[in-house]
Image (cartoon, rainbow, N blue to C red):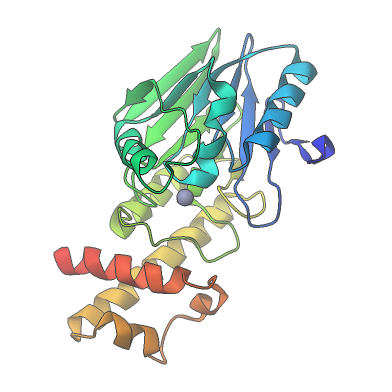
Length: 262
Ligand SMILES: [Zn+2]
């Protein structure tokens, strides 16, 4: 990992994404301490990012914000054992289960602070808001820095790509609302969970994609189509052609379940 790829995006926000599609790790420099937002998939890289950040700013990390439970956002938590790790209550609950199962070989440090709704970190005159919306997963939350008008979306936004929308706890209805909440903030800059640095336009596109996908599935459920029939249908929205192997099937299955249970 080359530290020259850790980019300063605003006065106080820095970001790193190992490749075009892998998950972002970011940090925010406040007056007296640093905040990490998501910890990546590879602790070796997370460690390099931490050392870079603390050397560059001369400040130490105090908090880590975990936007949701997925491994590409939580596997690096063990680099921050000395910090307060914060997530929504639901994200922690799912992560606790994962640590007993799929993630049992990983050294994950569970959040020691949880919240419901909204959490605020204050440092002098500066505020960082952590807002729970659900959507991409149960417990998904985004970070908002009001004084710089920056939103860090976690995986609520996959910029310029078909999103991973196949988590068993996905809720497309709440996801659309989550987008609206972020759009209403009229951010100057949007740092997505995956994909290139984005903007309010990216949020609107992300929302449109989830909306269209959901309406498509709702229509098919109404016609009593099965998941298999939906996947084989010739009127799938065009953007589904861009989906990574397996992601489309998982998305259809997950959305189908939510629509059926509604
Ligand atoms: Zn995710």
